[in-house]
Image (tube, rainbow, N blue to C red; front, top):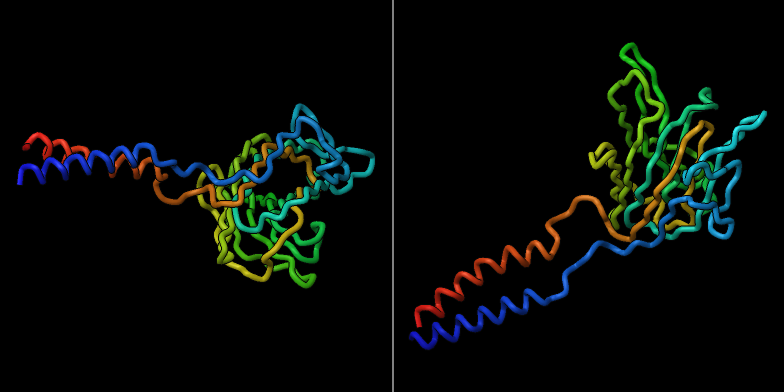
Length: 243
């Protein structure tokens, strides 16, 4: 009996060693990223855009036109992360800003999913209205909307945003790691473009696009392995010492 316990203890320690050297799952595959050190025309098709201090901005001219930048991207299930700041130096009468995270064609009013930000004003201050928009058969549908808490001033506020979409069509939007929007739609399943679009003075930076969901989820495998290994080690030591 004691010999069996000793053998079992050795087997458990062997299992512990296997857990220790088993490759752990790391973060999902980064498909592409952009920090706008320069605006590479081979990667970005852009209109009225410029780089200022490593950030993508629009060009203010005598006649303000739409600021657009498109990147070829086929990620339809995964995570889109980026930073936004409304600088507000010009164009405040047309303050709409859109991130087209899925667009089978060049982002326009035909087929796309987009995150839209628009300012709204009230007696307590100004707020942002966040909307997941669907453009399909030339019709726009607002899938879900969120209005932020009012503030006396919106310009200059850094926003870390992340959009996720899973294989069921569930789309989620996170503002500074907090879930603010969630909707499910399956009319659009493929994409060829990612796009940035605005009529206002917005700064856009630090884009990272993954082909996996990079927000939320369970414990990483390395944590699970450690949790499982602790009781295994305790049991193994007890069994061996009883020999």
